[in-house]
Image 1 (cartoon, one colour):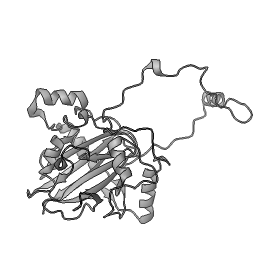
Image 2 (tube, helix red, strand yellow):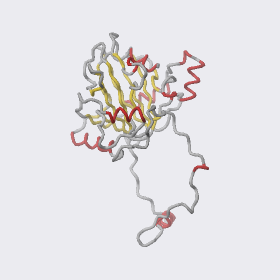
Image 3 (spheres, rainbow, N blue to C red):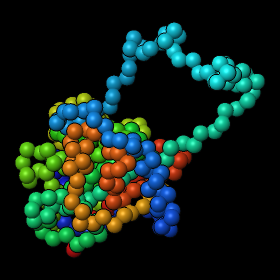
Image 4 (cartoon, one colour):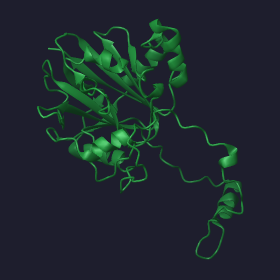
Length: 311
């Protein structure tokens, strides 16, 4: 599992969130509310599988499976029986513009968990000073469907893509809205692979979390990534090209609205753990991410970074 192998030698450090705009308490509550508003009121109970959810992009629905029959289409009527769809068509033909709809801002929630002496995962402050032997895990949550990429740089050196990975999740990186994603997975067969371990190696590490509505152009995922790593071992882990990385760095400098909550020391709930391992969505009543970042409504990509500084 290359993601674990790469990060085990990196996480020996203090973490700092970069690119967040300082906000008032009320503004932070507004950011948190905007992120959580798309969570369902009640948690999903439709999935009973105990296997990890697929991270591959969903297959497009074929035309044969689409319900195109006008006979089965519900007609939109008002209380007087008037067809509102026809009224909308007439209005559009007469030049009346529909009311504008606000574009949904991309949101990313991040929670850092640390393994306590009992082996439980507890929320921890990213800025704490970690010691050799400490173990942590990151839980991510998005407010809409999209793709997650994670890159690492060491001492401002060349970037390396550590997720998606050919050996993880079938090389997929697709996330569903409010279905949490943990790195590394608590379902890993060995205890040592369920956590990111801090060692004695010094170095300034930076993790880039890139959340985008569409796959990044110029980077292989899924079967393309698997084939690349199978045919050319030296090509993996993937190093993004100069053009791709220039866009990531540019986007990382864009200001983000952010909100943090003081939940340190709280043990990860059974709901959070099951949601991330069974592909279940979190509900409004479930625990919230420790940190929430929201991008501009004008962009389809959100980039945030964690500085990991070894003392």
